[in-house]
Length: 278
Image (cartoon, rainbow, N blue to C red; front, top):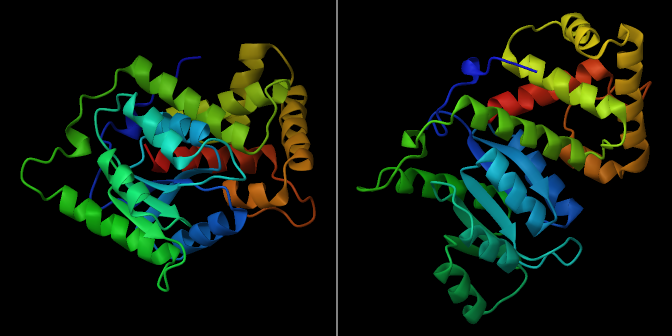
C-alpha cells in the first residue's frame, strides 16, 4: 500500500521540539509517575515505555529517541539494564542517545561499569531528591550541553532515510505500539488498524470514512466488515491487557460509557503520536 510520507519531514532532532524519551522500567507505579510528570510539562514526550530490555532495543531502533531512562534491575520485566547496554553496543544507530540509569543499587563498581559502557548519568532511587522531574531536567541539561559542545554531531545532520527505510521504520513502530496494548496479530482487525494509521500518516486523507473506503477497495470487504473487525481487535485487547499497562501506553481519553476506544479514536491517537516523534 503506497503512502506519501514527505509531510513527516526528515530531521531527527530540533532544539525547539520536546525531548523524545524512551523509558525502560518494570514498576508500573514508576511508569505512571513519569507519564504524569511529562504530561504536566511541555518540554518532553515519551515515545514508548516497556519493562523489557529486549523490547527497549526494538523501540530504540524504531523510534530513535534522543534520551533513554533505564532501570538497572527489571526484576518484574525481562532482561536487565546491563543487558540493554550490551545489546545497544551491537547496533548501529548513527547517533548516541543520552542514557540515564535509575537503580536501587548503591555500588561504585556497578556505576563505574555503567559509565564505561556509555551511560551518561546514574541516579540512586533512594536518594532524598529523586523524582521524575530531576531525571528529565538532567536529561534536558545534558541535551543542551551535548549539542553545544564543539565537535558534537547533532542528530539532524544524519543521512536522510530513503522512502523505503522510512516506510519500514513506520511499519515497525506501529507494530510495536499495537503489541504494547495487546492488539493480537491473529486478528484481521489488527491489519486494518495498522493500514488505517499508515494512510493517515501518509497524509492522503484526514477523514476516517475516506480511510475505511480505501481499505474496502484494497481488501474487497464492506465498510461494516472492516469497521467491526477493527472494533473487535480493540475490544479483545482491552479485555486481555491490564488496566495499568493500558494507562501507560494508551493515554488518550476513553468514553466512560463504552470503556474502550472506537476505531476512529484509536487510529487518530496513534497517527498523531507517531507523527509527533518523527
